[in-house]
Length: 614
Picture 1 (tube, rainbow, N blue to C red):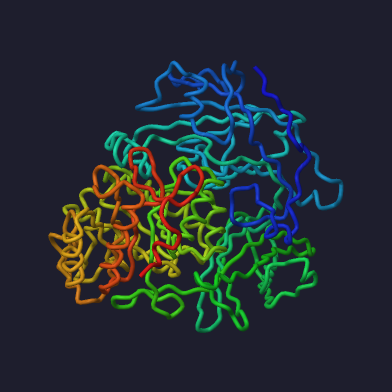
Picture 2 (cartoon, rainbow, N blue to C red; picture 1 turned 60 degrees about the vertical axis):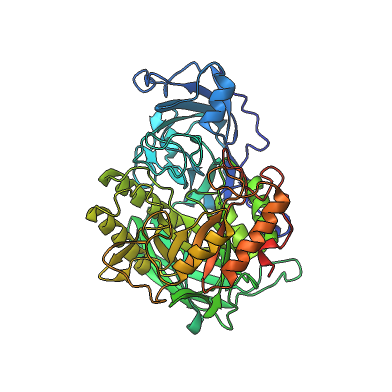
């Protein structure tokens, strides 16, 4: 069975000029950093086969196989199975599927630049376990992995020209399981079965795949940004990828405004150069620049700068990437949170993207802004990186979380750590991201109260985050069971999940929490480890509340009554000394029918500005 290889453009597509990006141009690649080279999207119809007996590798399907179905990439294994194998039950313990398509080799232009270029294959996200062959030859990721694990971040392969032919065959094997040690968020597992707050699995090639040209010696598509606003300084964290060792220069150029037709000759407001001797391989490098008369990023003034970062070799050849960033500082001091040294109240909403695609999430983000939220808590899930760029532009603060495993073991902690590091490498650019949660409600850390090894791991990762990524606030375990060591909280925020449909009980719980009561407030004690005495030394947040309409939480499910209840509950919150709150939740998802935004249309079910009303 062969795939239709018709494609709208089999010559490589050149990235748009800068002015197009903010004037109606939508970046087709799911990444936040722009590389102004050529690319070819490989989205579309692929051959597809289920491998229930796991015989594909032994039978060498990557060499030759008669595929019996087709599927659209990007898309989930679950969706492809339901369409191609309607008589089969959706998988329960494990699933293995194979995808394959052909593509003709795009032609590079004939100028001297070609000697500096190579092809790179990138998967926007694919999980949970992915192995790739090109023309029957197994590929290794840039990190040297035969199999990529994880389902929330991109991964790439540099392609050896020796294995490329005029018509190429790309084969992908994806395996998923109910393994509770994997970082899976709220997708069901061997421990937590689907139903209630646990959802169907969503595995496979869930984001785009593309072939692009990249320089052999280049900066990778990842930029970390740490602002020192008092000094108007920015620390950039860049990653070099080198095949030809030697002397290089990194040149950084910062533009005050996004390039536009009205400013065709705009000059950078800051330029600096840094000389480096680079060896073969990959290297992280931090560089500092001063931004004159810096404008700080905030929800009210989401001012962004444009960074163009260039790697220049000894002969003057330039490889560049670019990204938007903002200068901002987030800090927890005493009972308050400060953004750019000004006290801020986090007026938040919990958001679970589920199976929403980029366009749907984009609609939801705009709707949450209309509600009057200044914070969106993206709940233990990864999203398309373009959404973080959108939040930067809209002025929406983000609270992000590592998709949790469902069991507490050494293996689950290692999987958790690797997923966290992969996410951090690609999400350090965005001023909108201000908070990270390591765990939520003990999921994947169920023994946090009794197992010192679990607490030690969380403490280590908290300390790592504070040293390596000081631009974020970090929560150890959101909801309850925060860790105290020698009386010091190993979390920047003291957060509680409080659910009750009774307004009187709500006020009682808020009073207890505000008065520093650590027991009989949330579902479990607020603190584990050593004794902790609140005394207003950390910001207090009610990081989940409401849920009105969901059967487990009670409250009204009529939209008008729900809006009235939200106002009453918000009034109680505002009359106390909390640093923020997060209403649950934005949209309906599976059994959780408590959304106040229509999932399909993005229309509000409650009045605009509801969260801002006094």
